Length: 345
View 1: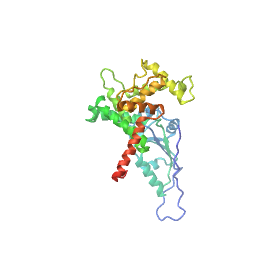
View 2 (view 1 turned 120 degrees about the horizontal axis):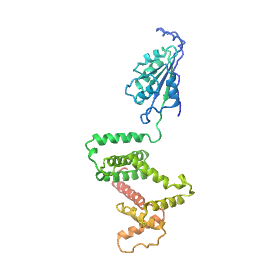
View 3 (view 1 turned 180 degrees about the horizontal axis):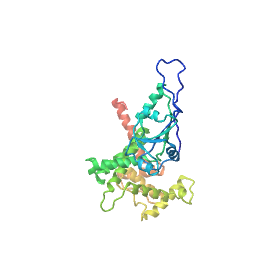
View 4 (view 1 turned 120 degrees about the vertical axis):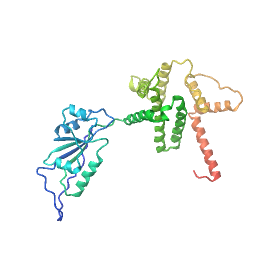
């Protein structure tokens, strides 16, 4: 955990005469305001040690939100919390005499209050207390995924369209989003890549949410995540186990060996989805055959299909993705057509 302290906003008294009345000096110090922020993605009550120290040492603890999830836990821990929403001036007055006031922020913060304090400090007429921003809990990496799950829950329950969707009905969108992701990758557009990754992630969460409602074999997004975590750990014994792998080829060998053991396949072609694009299918078949060390000659029947099969196998053997290569050639052809038409990119 980190302890973040804001810049002290106390300003010196003006050195030039000021015709307006000056404020009366504080009796014994201007005190301290601690703005305590928490993440709604972290279980209530799990606060940092500096946060608990600040709460214990405070002369007064305030919270404008009576339904704030932290309040029951603070009170159970013996911290008295006043449900109050003071103005900036009232908060400054509450700190007079060197007192410390902790404000438990509602939501992402207290912008109205902090803006008011900034205006008071900028006026130069008020002796400001020391101001501190103290994050009491932090989001872990991946925490925003919890937001996505919650949003999906609500959409599934309240949206007339989303509430009626099925796995089969959404299947076409998964294919579309996957292709758009590939396009963003090949175009090198970082903003588009981020957006398309989100669209693909949405499909995963959407399907998992639908799966929760299955009366016979329900599963959740946690089951999906748990399954892939277990699979990754099992297929990376060089990372999580005792085996070693110094090259990408050795990693791939580990992966194929453990995958074969898991699936217990009878043929190297088992598990290859036949509905994928033709060039990708041909390359995948050729890859499986080559990796298994099998000598299976390509069929020599006449026809464009067999010629494409041979080209896809050759591309795979040379380390070229035939689908990506054809898409690149198609884009070049598209650009040539647009140039002939006088259409700008």
